[in-house]
Length: 192
Ligand SMILES: Nc1nc2c(c(=O)[nH]1)N(C=O)[C@@H](CNc1ccc(C(=O)N[C@@H](CCC(=O)O)C(=O)O)cc1)CN2
Ligand SMILES: Nc1ncnc2c1ncn2[C@@H]1O[C@H](COP(=O)(O)OP(=O)(O)OP(=O)(O)O)[C@@H](O)[C@H]1O
Image 1 (cartoon, protein in one colour):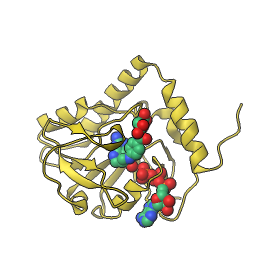
Image 2 (tube, protein in one colour; image 1 turned 60 degrees about the vertical axis):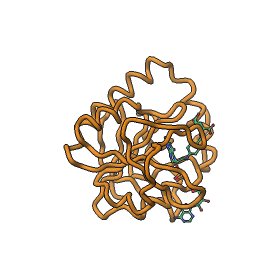
Image 3 (cartoon, protein in one colour; image 1 turned 45 degrees about the horizontal axis):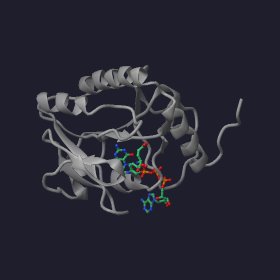
């Protein structure tokens, strides 16, 4: 058994390597389970922030279309350097952006648009039981989530194996209020 990684960078390397070993049929089954859980979390008329999975990330583009059909407004992140993320509404179309990301082609709503969302699905490499999230390491979400409205549900989406007891945390880390995994559904984070 290999020792547990100590730093965030060591955790990122381990978690990304593990994601690459997941067989396609497992990814599809996990994405379906995540989609079912997401659709149970939302109500018609609600605005949420979501993400388009990139590479081996859990989730699917299909759930975004299901959300539109349910009359949920879906905002997707747009990367603009190291500033907080910008946001644009999903209307069914996407175009390629940086880092192999897909983004909506429509109007940019500005970083403050995140405050319209009552639920934010946050992509992550791992989340711990107290809601500490490990992301890609650029701090995009940490810079953005401070603009979310108070009381907004911040749901980190990870595979079951990426829901960990403890991760290294920095002062700037914005904690998730809950974690969504394919096997366990939505689990509320505990107090640190
Ligand atoms: N889907 C998604 N969107 C997101 C994020 C994310 O983590 N996931 N971000 C979170 O902050 C921001 C963008 N940050 C990112 C930074 C680097 C890479 C990245 O390393 N991409 C790889 C390909 C993906 C892979 O194979 O795992 C690449 O560029 O090669 C992706 C997103 C905003 N949008
Ligand atoms: N609110 C902030 N203001 C200024 N710098 C920040 C802020 N949040 C994070 N950073 C910087 O961003 C860098 C990456 O932070 P961290 O390792 O926590 O990223 P992450 O949460 O894993 O990534 P991401 O949010 O992009 O997915 C660090 O150098 C950190 O100092």
